[in-house]
Length: 244
Image (tube, rainbow, N blue to C red; front, top):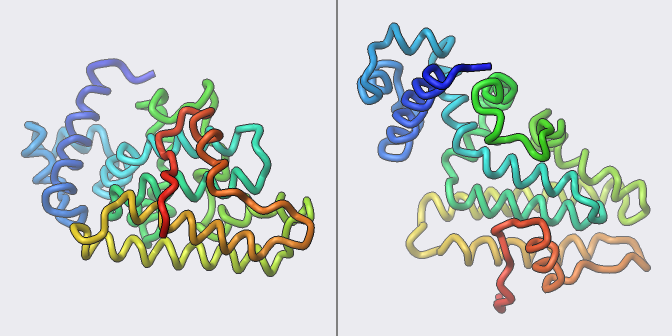
């Protein structure tokens, strides 16, 4: 167990790195400027982090813990696998659209594998920020590539006869491309494209596409029905019923 004093110093460094990332960009973070801003020398920082990469990983994880907690609740819920899958995308959009640079670094960059591999080390310092019902996040949340995580969630839908394996891949590819396109617009044209509007547009189009890929006689997902489920699990990402 990390003692309170040591944990507080971890937070000083992470908060300093987070401020630099927000003001200048993640690529501007260095051992020296983080140490200076935190009020310590570089040698002290190395008593807490192995290297710059681990500092960056901890900083990014610190920024995505609410998402990890939310998505873990969705995955461990009693909802049908298809509803879980839609809710998982809704949660990811809710968080990533509000912080596109950090979420791209965490889940869709050359640094993703290492960053997510540090969750276990991060949890030794800040266990309560990710734990759901006193349990660690599921492997689906923290393991593998984006495609592997997606297919882990879609596999039960294939097994239940909701869709074919080819349809599942089409759904994954469409979701990924649509989310990436939306992130790009938010990062380069944020003032003209409100975040909430972006999320609602994404989820409506995505649900329509998922419904089009379901096998005959499989009940379609009703956009308006998702809010009650979202509220049930205490998630913040309610879906406004606004026209496209």
